[in-house]
Image (cartoon, rainbow, N blue to C red; front, side, top):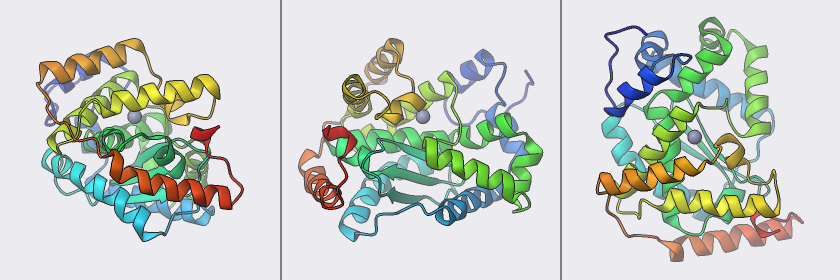
Length: 281
Ligand code: ZN
């Protein structure tokens, strides 16, 4: 491993980098891909998703609500990584229980995840987790690891429409750019708990959401896609529980009463369109 990396986010990063030999450390990813290139990548991917016919929710009640929760999380994210221009999109697909982030700060959530969540604290935990992947540069780093620097840069420059279409296709089908390493997932979990707590939410929201997904998956495997991209292990929950305790993360807000009307609206719209939401099977 190279030395002299800029470890700026959390002290545990040093341990993570030391522990994972196969991944490009975030300091290296930062040196390889500039913030500007990350933004371009994010824009390219968004344009390709649009081109492929991704259906977004336009209902201002739903969109404003989801963006409002994210904004509270971005207060912390912006301190850890200033200069990210965050965009939040709601994808209209009640059957997908998923959310993902792309480089450049584009966050996407499927209506299926909103319907599956019990309260706002759970959604806040998901936003903390996803924005953590961006803050820690996991998204850009994983792309370089999987596709190679040259391909990633050519996508950012708009020079590689084939690779871009393939990437967006994977995103649309899988709901994730690429699989993150377990270390990255653990780190993103910590962001999820920390950012939710800083915003006043119960930091256990992300844990409760994972447990909820486990239940859905038990009834209908393959529906809770968020779990297949975020493999849940007993130690992940144990670690997160300990992390919240050790760092004395406070926060009690659940906000179930605010999520409820949005959920009801989405469920009604799904039924009107003849679609049965994944969480309600
Ligand atoms: Zn993740």
